[in-house]
Figure 1 (cartoon, helix red, strand yellow):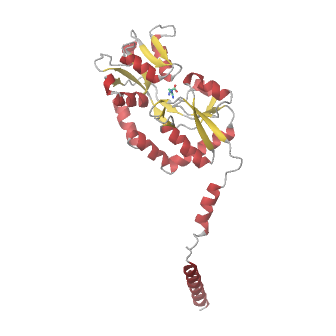
Figure 2: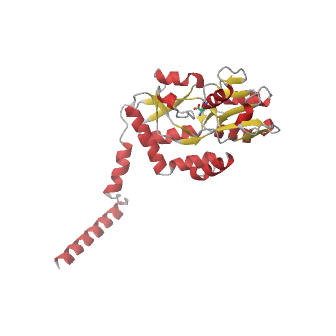
Figure 3: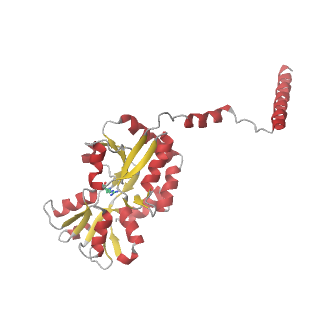
Length: 286
Ligand code: ARG
């Protein structure tokens, strides 16, 4: 009985509240738990520090400049989304690859996002976020080339971007003192040299090579995969010891991976989910 009475009173009270709200033309306020979430998410906004992110924006589809000279690409979208989750502000500054890690070390850049492969050597001078992308080296050659594997490049002229993992792989194959390695300040410059016949092949990250070949049909290139190339992973580079910012970046990355934002960005550039895209890549390297 008591219960029934209480239920009646509660129901009556709710009805009265509903009528009151309806009369005021106001929407019912959302229940407390959901109201708290947006409030805390919007909270971190004190002295808004803007973190400067360096990127070598000549590396489509990861980072490039559009017609309006805006820096765009997969890396840019990933960092923007992760930063939003982490509650930090970022701005991107085009930074030549050759000086990019010095700029980071000197504090001219707070982060570098530039399809940077996480390597043990680099880890000695900089910190990396958790990996956000899988990559591997891929060879670009002319359509009519007989080159079928990495080893075939031994006695040929090979173009690379200076100081990249592609440069490292080719240097290992041809030798440190080889004069057959042509080093360029950007990967597109190396690929232009391949088009004009100055080199026989270019070795660079698969995503960039595939994108270039697909968007420069006139160059008449094809790609050659080789399973001897070690798997690589991209990370966001930070100045060593910046644990606070690193934690924020990692939290942002984890959040966009967890809520599907990362997959959406991935699909918008590579046309499938990361899992689906990994399959043809590994099949091609057989
Ligand atoms: N992943 C390769 C490396 O870390 C190449 C990166 C080049 N990136 C760029 N934006 N140019 O060495």
